[in-house]
Image (cartoon, rainbow, N blue to C red; front, side, top):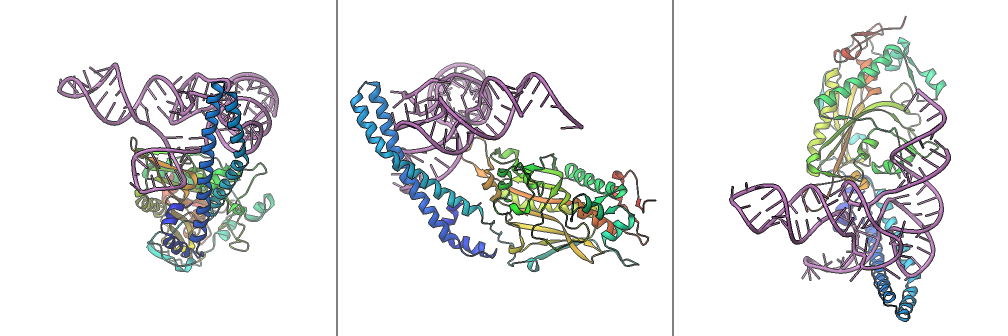
Length: 427
RNA sequence: GGACAGGUGGCCGAGUGGUUUAAGGCAGCGGUCUUGAAAACCGCCGUGCCCGGAAGGGUACCGUGAGUUCGAAUCUCACCCUGUCCGCCA
């Protein structure tokens, strides 16, 4: 959500910024909507003020038992009535029109975000780790999982449908181990507070982080009107909705391990094989709520926390700075972390860390203030995967595979697998 | 799911149609007094939006939305949420 005042003050800068997202100029039409809204409010306020004054005089006249004067005044105010309700409707209509228009516009890219309309313009910032040299042709995760008899795509299809998978035995345990490992890392080493949140949320919550009104098709919805969360970012960030936080309490650092549900409405035909793109997957999410001046540093810190998971698991990765056209709508700057998948012979996204600036905070009315000082400011919100558990599992399978199809368990996970060092085909 | 009771500012709490411009208290901030502090006393003390260079003025907000009325925190309707009891339940 954008501040119309800022657009009014510098329409050219606003249009230039949204152009980087591939959008046509909007400032002129927004300012026109705002002018109508302000004119309507000025007239409504003035007329309402007149009514309030006269109504008080009626009260005073009645108190003095001056019925004649009261009746005269009532007749006078009565004439205002139709006009007043028309003005009120008009004002509200313009207010809603402006809010609706603003709510559809994505965040403005930060100055240091590169130009570009798709992933081809993303910049690689750094690499970590060296892809392992295999003495055999590495397999993809689905061949490994099926070979172990622990990844059952047919059962997923039977129980639910395409893009659902059943995992069994030590593979299921490995997935659990990954989630626990990540949570422990972020809570004990990076100060994130472990949180359990609703997996179903209401309209206001889905609006706050930007899923609504534009992207409802990407979410599953219950027949009772709840939205199934596509990421724990949604409930975690909305904890700040309609709150004024003492600045001494910031930053908030929150983490949660949750299932995520995505309809993948626009992804027909992509990544249909295997577990890369599922309707349901687990993810450890990181959310930070900060003072405006702290969000850039927090963004680096959060990204480092996510990278640390891969470093501890000894999985090679690279970190990308997304270009303006490849970022999600809420973000003003995004780092993607891509893990090396030897079976696919390429890097694949495993985490996305975004600084949303005040774009979500304005939608949520999430503010902070220095106690005793006048006024409030919108907080900044950040979110990042720390990491997507399903994709991390894939990365472990492909990077730790042995020639016989078994999987070595990374050292960092041993405390979480009860000492199990190797996953082999079930007897 | 059923019955009853509720929802008022950062917190507590009064307020059942017209000086409510939401009493009073707590917390907070400033001041007087004091060597300093406490106490006492005095003052300030919600969030938007609109107009204005500013000073200031207007307007909205008492769970949400609609309605009645010249006028609604107060009356009506619907919905949401909370509490208590009953039922059901991991």
